[in-house]
Image (tube, rainbow, N blue to C red; front, side, top):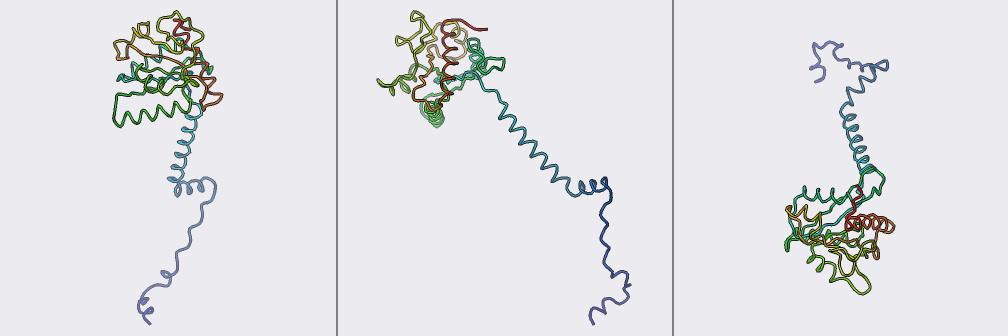
Length: 236
C-alpha cells in the first residue's frame, strides 16, 4: 500500500532501469576507454619499472676502481685534497679492468680520539681488515702501531714485503714492508693541504684474507702501483 502511495503520478517509463552502456567498439575506442579508466595505475607501474631498470643498470654497469686505498689518519682532510691524492696515485697504476682509465679510490677513515664517530669508523675499519676487500693501506704511524703492529705475531705480519723496491730508497722501513712518504714529491705537493708529514703506505699480505682470488688480483694491482710510486716511476 505504502509503495503505491509513493508511486502515484510517476510515469512507468521513469521506473524502468537505465540500460547498460554499450561497450566501445573498435580498437581506438577500446584503447581510449581503457586509458580513461586505468591511466594512473599504468603510469605508476611504468614509473616503477623504469626506476627498477635504472637502479639495475647502475648496479651492473658501475665502474669499479682499479685500486682502492684505505687511508687511516687523525688528520681532518678536505675531500678535494683526497681527490688530488687519488689523481696523483693513479699516475703510477695500471688499467686493471681494461676500461681505458686508471682509477684510484681513497676510502678515508678519520680517527681523532674518542666519540661516536670514532667508534663507527673503527668498526668500519675492522670490517675491511677482516674481509680483505681492501689491500692497499696508508696509516698515521701512531695508528699503524696501535691498530696493526700490536696485533701482529711471529706467525703473521700485516704488510707484505716490497720486493720490487731497493732497500736504499729513503722512507722504506727496515723490514722492507712499508714506505713513509715524508719528504717525497707527493708529500711536498700536498703538505699544505692538511695531510700528515708522516704517512706510511703498504700492501697487506693475502694470508688470512676472506676475499679469495679477488684478494690476489687486488694485491697485484696495489703492489704494482705502490712499487712504481716508491721508485718514482709514473706510468702516465
